[in-house]
Length: 304
Image (tube, rainbow, N blue to C red):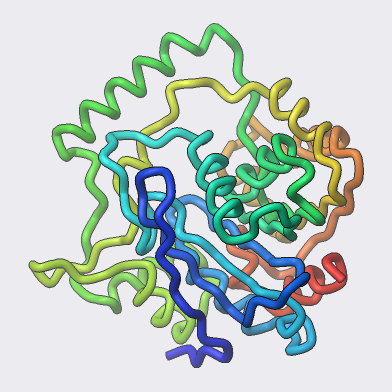
């Protein structure tokens, strides 16, 4: 089993109808800039542990570090809903910062879906962000108005499947099965890390079956279309320096099969006023698992 170097403390924060679970590393210090970590789709706050352990003691001692489980993930409550709305993540983040760091600017890091959230949030609340890091938060492929009817039909069908429990997540016999699933998804993830993550990514139910700590309603597609023009308008309002970090593996091509490319994403990033880019070698989409030390070094330099 992976041996944690820096234990986290758990906080439960009531906000917007949910009890939010927040992991905190380090000790809050007056005047220190907090570092806030936002995980991706079907992930949890504990996923950041390897990167936090890789930070230098000098870096960790200077600031509090927190990571939240988004609504319906990890130990945060799942609201009574059959689908999730992207703007709620921004509103949850805003409410969380108002509770924990009122009137204070922060450093904000987001991975994948969390990367998309932090980019939109920084464009909405530019005054709250000192520095921003986007880890493989590529956004979505461009859409057209003609897709709206079929998208709405798809949403209705998936809502119906959710209602009839046809959209439930697959259970696993034990923690070893969860770890095997994590290693199948990420070929670079070691056994020790997978065994540790499995304990935080899933939990056993009354029937002894292990289930992922993610509401199956997260699988339901959004009924609204992704509008590139709207995303670029948000990017243009970001006032903080931004670091966009990619893995050497091109996961975007694997997902979209040419319908959306890294070149298109790089073109979108030209709308960000202050941008730096970095690449993590020998890493895939879960780069904070694959190369935590390399990523920690890059972040320490950028956030200094």
